[in-house]
Image (cartoon, rainbow, N blue to C red; front, top):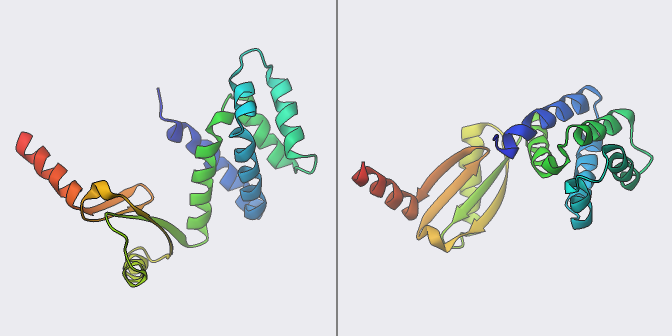
Length: 178
């Protein structure tokens, strides 16, 4: 069975293409955020997963929650997700759409995970180096994970730069066992 991220990708790309053509990236971003909030509600999620709830009933319910002001393209997108039983993929679709939007706007989101808290100066230095390397404006999210023992792990999209002690120990263990 395919990973949810893989199944969600064509929907995110289609939404992004439609949003770009209509020059409504912001409106689509807002809709996907709202739809994601609706889908993540436990009561709505139970309706989505309930085989006794008919597709048309679910569609009417979700569209009524989102409001009557939806434009046709946005409404059709929601309908396609419901008809194809892909509404549960909304969190993945939204993340991928936002990544495409940021990339389109010349922005790159980076996650820095460090074993210990890092200073603002260190973050600025890393951001400057990443902006030079990727030639994009970088927005950064910093996390601390003590299991890394030392060093940092930098996640850029689906690329991981692992400069952690834990990563080096794991690589050494793999090398020794093979």
